[in-house]
Image (cartoon, rainbow, N blue to C red; front, top):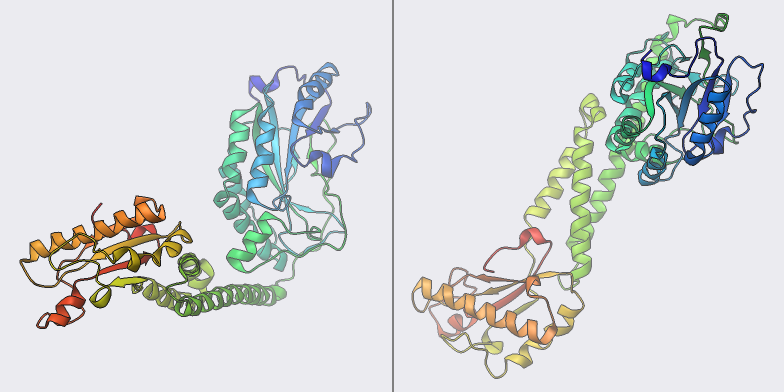
Length: 465
């Protein structure tokens, strides 16, 4: 045992385990207060600020002190709420305490008369500092008798590890143990086969990623505490449990595979159905409905990422018949081939400029006025102002002329519609994109035009500053 953890802890002193953390008071407050004749005392610390005083009191009683930090993955509605609860317990900065992290979750349907199935015991001899990543890896390496429950528990434990890492909670817990007086000595996992009364952050993540959701308990059941191994307490052998009959192995494996198949199929169907609806909505939304078009475009991009995740998920690779990849390709094609139609095009009878000129004509304000409410009602939308010309003159001269015409329209809109300049992107096309033949006067008049096109997102902004 490190000297820093042995300080003021005589070998003959009775051990006391402090239950700390954001869930201590809520779920363990009914624990009996410490008794002088008890071989091991469990003491609830209701809040971080109370910890120094309790430690001081227990030191005076010559107790050997340890800490137990219970954490409930479904204790909060969101990851952010759980992270905030963890951060509140970094206030304690007194003497170092060896601390065991206890993770409470429903990992299987195995019920033991209201008792959780623990991955191990609270071993008071283990006080050396460890890391959360190392202990989580150990949980997946623990071997237990093969059964339907153990197979399912292993898969769910791995999913729990993924959630802890992806949500940032593993990092926050490690920071708690590294940046305060708590020193992580072990991680214990409590499989509560009876479930909890509601779903929280972890269950929502499970449902979103894998289409699985832990079962719920019909009533509130207080969590139990792990058994303790103390060198000063006489050894008591574990109760014998019936062994696993190997003849049930094929049945268990088939049930587990069936559950995974059902869950992954549901998850895949949910993502494909949502993307199909959004793709249809995207194609049916008119270009003039700028805000709706933009919102649907962004939703389609987000669903593409979900489809790619579904395609690359382990269960999709396992079954090898996922349709998420095919749907992701369809969505990707729709996004890549999307070219917003102009909401305004001035040419021909509504031409804004005289031949060879970049100065707005006398009727230009009248022709541009109907754009004002469109711009003002879509202040978050970025517009491209694209200038074009006929093929009279050199290509370079036509290019420069088209840019000056686009800038003239931009300046008019900035002054009349109070549109920020950074929401109007200039693009000059010269004579490169005619819409009519340049062999006739009428055709050249149509090609001398300015188009205003809404951009789906900022990544489409190109052209002159």
